[in-house]
Image (cartoon, rainbow, N blue to C red):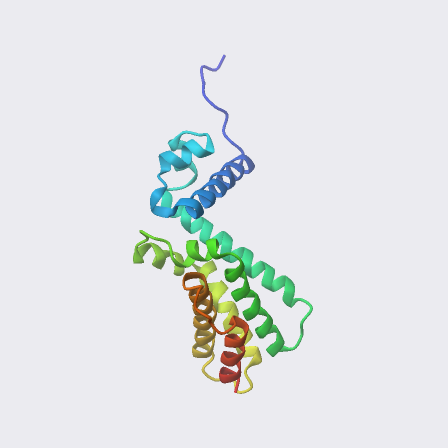
Length: 198
């Protein structure tokens, strides 16, 4: 007998399965009760594990939230890319992507609130997420679409930023002040595209 006791090391697949289980439960709790209302101890109880198990998979609650943000954004852009596979015209690709990006947040207001309006999140926490290369790549995706659709190819970043602000702003207004008769989000996107693609 070797004298060693304890658990066998977990495989990478088991680690990811547990991480996914923690993430799914965290998403549910964050959506139902808000980020600040959920403690690691509470999350562990809901998952059915010890708090140390959570810490073995994530550094803390903010890392769980960042993981969820990345998963949501990744899913949105994966859907957009799949829909653009059959569209060749650059302006139509841009319009379709902009509609779909905005529609997603309107159809999933809980995800919008988690990604864009989380309480008790510091600017530093958001900053580290936004500085992440994968996160930036999602937003820069629109830079490429704007560049391809722009006839003169000038001031691409500003044009893409105007579009991104319009999309997120339309979703923000509809999700937070829903009783106001806002102009349809697609109309707002069309107006924006008509002004930047000149």
